[in-house]
Length: 334
Image (cartoon, rainbow, N blue to C red; front, top):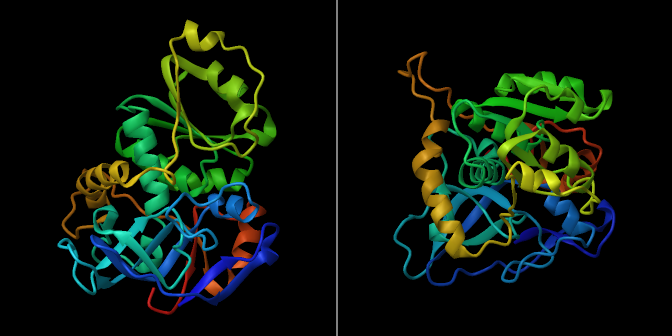
């Protein structure tokens, strides 16, 4: 099969499309023919040698999410049939023509949705749902601050928070991106080029989704309401901070770290089951939907590239030129 591989660590020049052995599914697994796959910052960190694939996943083939068709079933598979349209989140290997996954960590693609749109769902929406609902316990009327709100996770989190009845606040260094984010439920945007977000928060927030890391840590603690939750998803601005920890005790705050990629199957399966029951139906658009029904969720595809242009996709993401998800496609059946 063809696959994107990293020939070493470094800039996008280490990316190479080449032939590699096609993986075989083990008992309980399925093999999926990948039609589209999302690109994530974790893929770039892996390329730089900072975020290796977890044990059990390909070390040199990146890719954390896929959308495609079931192509082969192994012993013990009962949930899927050949030809079923599926998508999912994996520890690596999704930037290939085929990926092997366990049947219980796989999601069904909503009826009528393209493979390209489906590939924009797993990492962004599973991460956002887990962070907001399971970890952050976001409720109706809560105020939530989403950093990097124009990213894949940011646009997903905004939609989910709005569906839950929360007030949504988001940060970005790009004013036009903040304007676009309002289409997906952003109530208030903060342009961080104009100054620190801390100064722009007029009311304490109950939940923060943070991908910035150390430099934002003190300001995050400062704007949280008593018993607020800071859910940390990444460290785009650095993993170190020198900060006064007093607000954590005084306001009884919770600092919660979470990551999807390294979770074992035993943790992935319950999340996939909950997501299937509570979130997937929100992507379906019924022609008979009443105007007063909750707005369905929408995958946000900001850019699409052929898999052969993976290096260009990496460069665009590194320059922060994208809005929502970047999706790579193998063929025209997208």
